[in-house]
Length: 299
Image 1 (tube, rainbow, N blue to C red):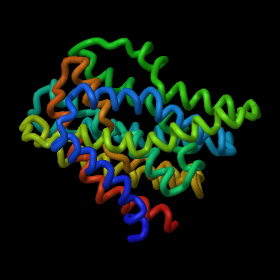
Image 2 (image 1 turned 60 degrees about the horizontal axis):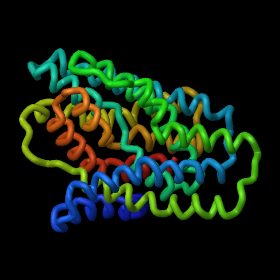
Image 3 (image 1 turned 90 degrees about the vertical axis):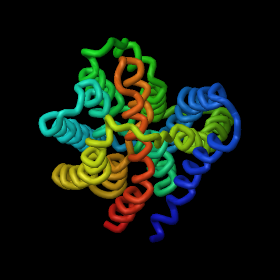
């Protein structure tokens, strides 16, 4: 119960974002601008700030990232099951397939920071930076027959990957950044959590979409229940413990990322079905994520 209360402010911000979009006529341009601000400026600053302030253990990073990768691969394997058990259109399946393993970085970094402080953000940031390329590669591969996207260019320009790499290298260099720069990063990091979660809430879409609902229950079970269990098993097998074990399970329990919708639309996929499933996953995680957080923090 205490853990659920700790995460309550994060979920309240998501619901606030949904309410603001519904009842304040801010316009689509405002929300697109907010998402760009968070994605390209505020969250990269959050990652760099956390990585600079945290002592990194390279030896422990390898099993941590291996656990994250194996968990995502497990989600991909489980995500293939509906293709052989239902008559869902191929385009819809190719689009919603990514909902079984993609993760919402905003919620992950916010929850890790709230529960574990800068060390939690740094650990989650390492996982996110390493996992984004795998998530994009798998998603583009499944959607490839329906369109094309400059994958290599997107990965090289991804702000979360670049920020993780920058913070990681600065940490290893041992350089002591000037105090004004640290203060600036801190201010931007403080703003990132609230605005990022409000943007998540504003992106919720719950309109009836028949295409995805036949598979929705399966993908929800995979993403919010099966993957955390897999992370628990794999992490224990690889000898993870403490903060790394807790954060990787939290990572596995995250709802699907809104970037899944963007990719589906860019590649001519079924964007409406993906948006609906992302929204349901986000709302369902308000119940499941606190339970998983309570589990790992009690170990």
